[in-house]
Image 1 (spheres, rainbow, N blue to C red):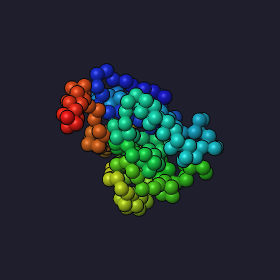
Image 2 (tube, rainbow, N blue to C red; image 1 turned 30 degrees about the horizontal axis):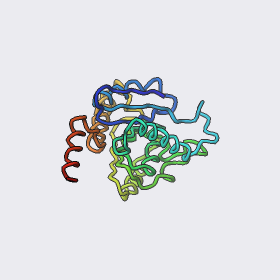
Image 3 (tube, rainbow, N blue to C red; image 1 turned 60 degrees about the vertical axis):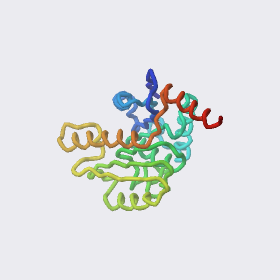
Image 4 (cartoon, rainbow, N blue to C red; image 1 turned 120 degrees about the vertical axis):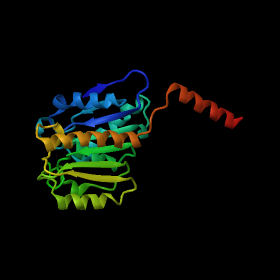
Length: 227
C-alpha cells in the first residue's frame, strides 16, 4: 500500500485501486496526479496475492475497500469527501464497491472481468454488478476483447437505473490498457481524455473539505441561528 498526505487543507481524499500486480509501477504517477488537484490519496493492489484467486471473493474485495474507507474516516474524511479510482482489476473492484458505499464519486478505468470471469471465484461483472449508490464513471477501450460493445451497452443500460448517476465512455481504436499513455496517437489522446474526465468527475461530486476560515464561518452561522 502507498499513501500521499498533503500539507495545508486537501480538497478531498481518494482511494486508488491499482491493476493486478501494478502497484509499484502505477501508484506513484496516479497519486502524484491526484495530489496536483488537491487530493490526499492511498493506493493499493487488492488482487489475490501471487495471482492465485483461491478463496478470494467479491465480498472479500468490498470488505477491503470498507477498511480503506474506514482508515480515511479516522483521518477525518467523511464518505462524501472520498473518491474511488480503479484501474483494471481495481476498476472491477471499484464498481462492486459503489453498490455498497455512498461515496463522493467513483471511476473505473478499463475494468477487467466485465464479460468474462476473472477467476472461478470472481464471476463476470455482468453477473454480479448491482445498482450503484455512488456516482460512477466507466472508461473503456473499444478494442478491449473483455468488454465488447454489446456487453457494455447492457451493463450501461442496467446501471442507468441506479439511484446515483452513471456514465459509460468508450474510446475508439484503443486497447484495454490505453490509460498507460502509449506512444500511439489514439492511445495517448484517450489516456489524456480519461485523466481529464476522472478529475472532472471527482471535482464535481466529491464534497470539498472546508478550509479553517470556512469552518469558522460555518460555526458562527450555526451559532447565530441558535441565538
